[in-house]
Image (cartoon, rainbow, N blue to C red; front, top):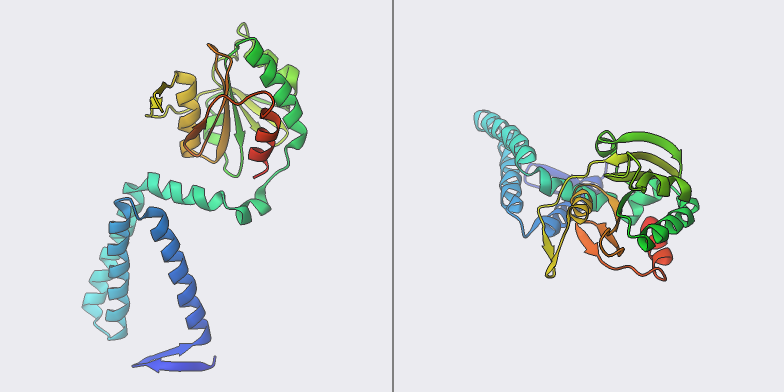
Length: 255
């Protein structure tokens, strides 16, 4: 490998420069995402420890290097355990990027018409419903809380599940691609109880709670008002009209 220049005892090549640039961009992006959280302070401390470990190894301070390596290992494990929510948020942002979705996105356009027809009928009849559309992240843990269905998505199937007399009407259904995977699934409740002076019921808090934890779009139909809302990435969009619904749902599931 061609040497570009030397800094003291270090020989710098073109690959080293590219490597440094990539790492710098990665750390800058992580810093930008987490800069308003306490995590960034711990992360900067870890970076300093790693830097000191590199320096002590380069100048052959073996005892100090061993101590720093041990502390770094413990620090890294503690960092992962203590800041799981923040790290999960970071990973979700990565999986929601357009580049990532090119490789894992599954077309579900054939299910959209069936879902829309069912949703509009449920809304007109004021029948409450929770419909989860999984995207890039596996919702296996949520599926395991319900009853496995593994059937093609149809309007009739959705209506029959949310019929108040059905034993499966409580909870949520999970749609993955063209398949209705499970029904009567229990979703985690969000700690948020009010958004813009609007109180959230249990169904809306459940939709919000799941969207905070996994990459999914959750459609909610209010039993009281028949209104249609969406939860995504820990945020709510309320009162989607029937005219807007088809285009809105298609855009959300094709992102």
